[in-house]
Structures are given as C-alpha cells and as structure tokens.
Amino acid sequence: MTGTGGETRAVPADDAVAPAADAVELPGADVIVLPGTEFGAFYAAEWSHAVRLASLLTQQRGAAEDIAQEAFTQVLGAWDRVERPAAYLTTTIVNACRAWGRKQQRERDRLPLLVSPDRTEPEFAELADALAALPHRQRAALVLRYYGDCSEAEIAAALGCRAGTVKSLVSRGLAQLERVIER
Image (cartoon, rainbow, N blue to C red; front, side, top):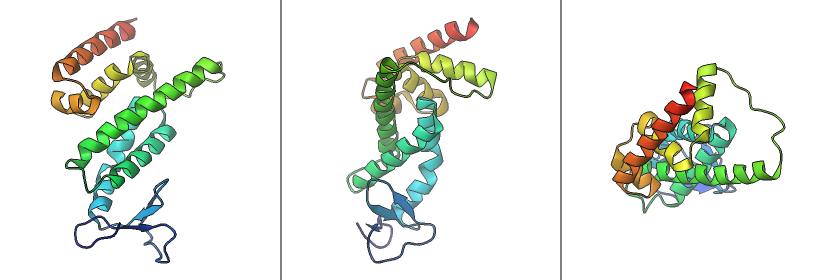
C-alpha cells in the first residue's frame, strides 16, 4: 500500500527501495511502515499503550510485545476500512490476549509447571496473581476500566457484550480481587 499526503505508506519489505533508518517492519505483513505517514504516526502514538495493555492481560512482556505487533499488523491490513483505529486496536489486543491465554492454559494442562516466573515487587506480584486467577472477561474488563480508563461502552465494544454485562464483570472481578488480596 502506498500513498501520499496523510495516507498510509507501506512498501513491500523486499522492494528495491531502501527503508528509512527509523522505518518499522511489521512481522508477518511483509511491509515496512514509513515514519511520517498516518499509520506511522498512529503506530508511534499507540505502541506503548498497546504493549502495556497486552502486558497487563498476559503478564508476560515478551508475549505482550508479540501480541501488540500482530495487532498492529491486523490494524494495518484493515486501515482503510477502520473508522476508529484505536478502538479496533484495543479489541484486537483483547482478542489476541484471550487466544494467547487459551493456548497457555492448554500448555499448562499438558506439561507441569517447572519454573515459576520471576517476581519483582511483592505488591505487584500479589495483584498480578490475583488478576491471573480471574476469568479472562473479568480481567479484561478490570484492566480496560482501571488501567485503560475506558468507558463502559468502550469496554463493551472491545469485549463484544452489553454495558450492563461490563458493570457485572467489573463488580464481580473487584469482589474476587478483594477476597484474594485480603487473605
């Protein structure tokens, strides 16, 4: 996809044109996003938020970066059709984290846990463990509400449910967190 002005400008990765030093290659998409484009600006503005959101949902930095990168690849593929790219990105990350969590659960069911992950801060570790114990939808609703500062309508759109369901998910998730953390 190439364009001029404020349009997305991406070139095939194997094109004869040498990319700029600060160009970003999206894995799996076989394209390089050039800075100074609309998508390049979106990528630069949303990257850290995307990784933090995925980190909170997966609790693994490496997986979060991979998920965020894949989500941007999907957004780029739908860039011309998407009206609200940030909301599309958030939904894509939530769905990808859910799929990642299912895969991790299948792996845990098949193989015994041999090594526990490193923990840095006791308070963070306790909260991370409590969040990890929640069902995905409750965890996603809490993270989007309190970390992402999303409205109930935005969370409902990201999770594919109604605003009333979001209220219930947040309420039940908070109650479960309080029970686990107070122990």
